[in-house]
Amino acid sequence: MNKILLKIRKRILRAIDKHQLTKYQANYFYQKSLKKHLLSLPTLPPYHSNLLRIINKEGVAITTLDKLGITSSSDIFTSAQSLMFKISQNTSYDPNQFVIHATPQQIIEYQEIFLWGLDQDLLNLIENFLGLPVAYQGIYFRRDIANQLEIGSRLWHIDQEDRKVLKIIIYLNDVNEDNGPFQYIPKYLTSEIEQSLQYRTGYVRDNVMQGVTSSEVYKSCTGIAKTVIIADTSSIFHRGKPPINTDRFTIFYDYTSRRHKQAFHGTSILAYSDLHILSKNLSEKQKRCIFW
Image (cartoon, rainbow, N blue to C red; front, side, top):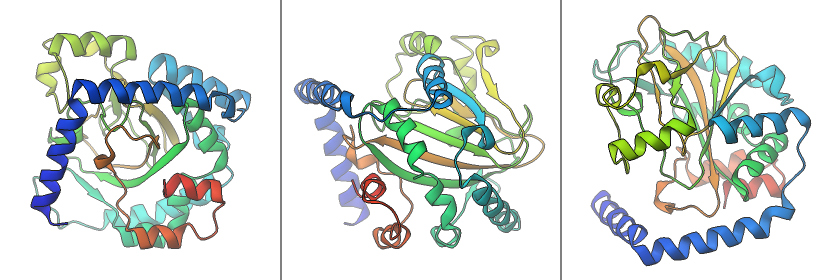
């Protein structure tokens, strides 16, 4: 499908999605699905249960790779450091560019990074948050450039892909206030600000945000390498604060339910054939998270 037809298709789907009857029906079936799946939710260990409680209350929980207890974490951090070195060698970028992503070929080369996001213990935590079977939208391996540009995801926004969106962010280098921490506004304040701004979708500049709230309410997620941030990005205003001193290196893992509110929002950077190669040794349950 060419780009023009794809844009037309997306415009039509958005118009349908916003229609009152469509919204009513979608919400009815969503609530019905939640009730049906409630008894199928997997049991969580105490530490993951506590993380879930914090996410539901605050919108964000902060932990570390070690505390999270995923068995392959040491392997992926070693691989991530190798990939980080390769991406850091890239100096031929546009001065108006604020982020460099690992290529699909690099993700396939370091496939253990992609596969970490399909660890069954991790999927169990995410399924309990969503209340529904998990759709793994894939990953972004990012180098955020220290150029102080305020564009794209460095502006305040709320993710719209689904009713609930969970992102897991792993810091690959130490992140302080001056090199691009993930920032958010707590859940209880976000709803008030949404009303003040009459926010529906899109990006909000920081000077506009400070017109309706104080920057003192901003929460900066700082931490050393291996810090893990688990964020309900569909319920909080959030952004990546522009780095000042040094580049920030992160991995973003994206998840929604399989009852995708807007199915045209798929985020995977990998081709279908690549996903088949990566999934060859996965369980059927894990595969369904990719090919939903």
